[in-house]
Length: 169
Image (cartoon, rainbow, N blue to C red):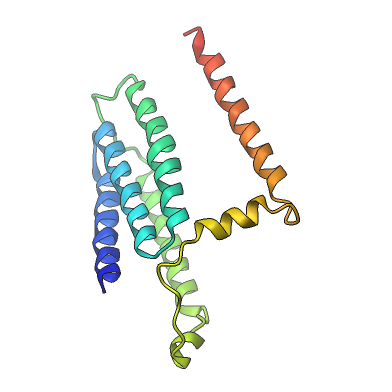
């Protein structure tokens, strides 16, 4: 019961913050509202007992991506002028409405698995997911360790390259 209430509170916060990101003319405030939206999504993951996803959301999106966006906004020349509207907003509105219609069609047309609801089966709640994911990644037989290390090396190379590019400026 408490997880359901927390889910809906975080869902409302996420939607309001996302709408604020789009509606806000000040880029810095829009970036801060984006951080709030990321936090609410992490709360949604936490209320759904997806602890690994909640921590990943906080570390990757609230930490790295948000800092990157805020630095980008702060280094923008005309940040005081704000986010100006351009001539492309009607076509963007049409594309967004078409995408929303497609998503609604897919949600309605999908045959959702309701066998557990009909049979009365329950899902094990509050079971941590982090250990199962770690076992799957670091198991020698699964073979996911090498791609994980390659991804980490690529991210490290990108960070070093970015530092080298802006070091002279």
